[in-house]
Length: 225
Length: 252
Ligand code: HEM
Ligand code: SF4
Ligand code: FES
Image 1 (cartoon, rainbow over the protein chains, first blue to last red):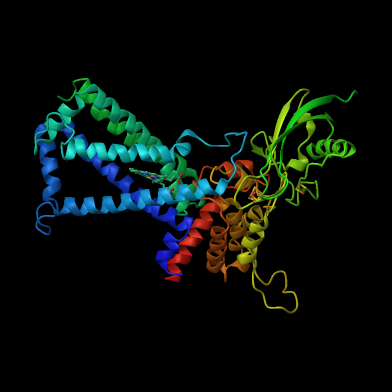
Image 2: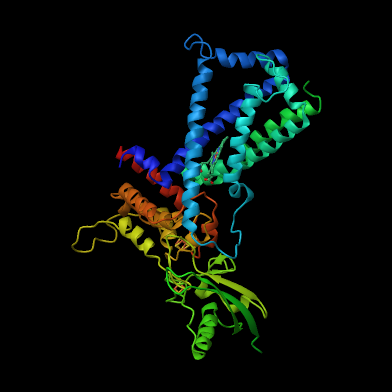
């Protein structure tokens, strides 16, 4: 069996591709959040950062390339992640056959129970988020190149902020179970690993969800304007 | 001391054959607190037979919690409500007069119903056959101390070897995944020095067989470990994944 069929031909292999693409997203959301905290340092710092993303890699990479390579990796990861999720979900749905009449929720917490629906929410969110703050298509007052303005004006809308906040809660739930699940899938499970896997997943989820919640909240409260 | 007796309402899955459409049939059953759950069903079956009705078919053998033959889902829980207990070890003192009990077979494509509560678990046999062994040259038995086994390795291997192959993990899993069983069988041998020569082939072969059997895909919910009557834990799934990954890297 070749490596490719080993990864794509079995559920265990597909889970590995999910865990790896998920780990790439984790690194991305951490970097994305950290970068955005520059908004607290004012318009200059923030716009400089947004521009910096495009100049990154200079003089080795031409203008904008870093960002595009980065985006290509993310899109590829997204395709792999979502395709595997879809394929595994179908396999699991087919595997039950007749449904149970009586259900007892054995050890199934809200986070693990919402991976699939929560994943769809995230997919919709990612699409909306790009159309909102990257392309400006769904932004009522978008000024190309002025990321700070777009950010503040975007979150001044209460419904938009509420949508973002709900989606961050969904992201936190997905990350809490996803990180733990990825540790299992990648076999990170020594005696010491067993102690830190749950706490690490929880901290990661709290940092990412809580950290990103700060942005809409600080605009709504006028802390950032 | 008086024995307390009870009248129960049982809703039991009845299915004539693998291809027949099954459904629930409701029975009144009498029991007392000293009966085991299966004895309660035995008594019900006697009364069904005396009325000329078909008895309820369910699987059982040792009735001591060691063989792994019994199994049914009781009010949504595989093997019933008692932790780390097979259904043959469940006793009627759990229940009281007037209780309603829903009894269903393991529900999984990989475990087709043969009749009523009796399912075909030969998928597990095929997974075992594909790698649940070590190849040893025949001849005289080796000395017991010829291969030193670390204490922890022996303990961890025995923890995994406690699996009795009952299938409750599949029944409990929202994905009907067989990863806990397969993981236990892989970990049992892969944790011992005797299992090392075939370690990665074993992981690969058993997982490929598991894939053949129409089970679902693990999402690490952990319902399996909670339902397992033998306390098999999720670490065997992590080991399965790790050894599969290593096998894939080695296979090239
Ligand atoms: C965009 C749409 C997304 C969909 C449809 C989706 C769906 C899923 C599903 C169904 C699982 C499997 C659940 C399980 O095994 O219990 C999963 C796992 C995971 N997801 Fe996502 N997800 C999405 C986005 C994300 C994002 C943005 C991140 C990170 C920020 C992420 C990180 C993870 C991780 C780390 C796992 C664990 C992999 C594993 O099972 O071992 N996902 N995702
Ligand atoms: S792992 Fe536990 S629940 Fe699954 S077959 Fe073995 S003993 Fe039964
Ligand atoms: S009949 Fe043997 S374990 Fe229940």
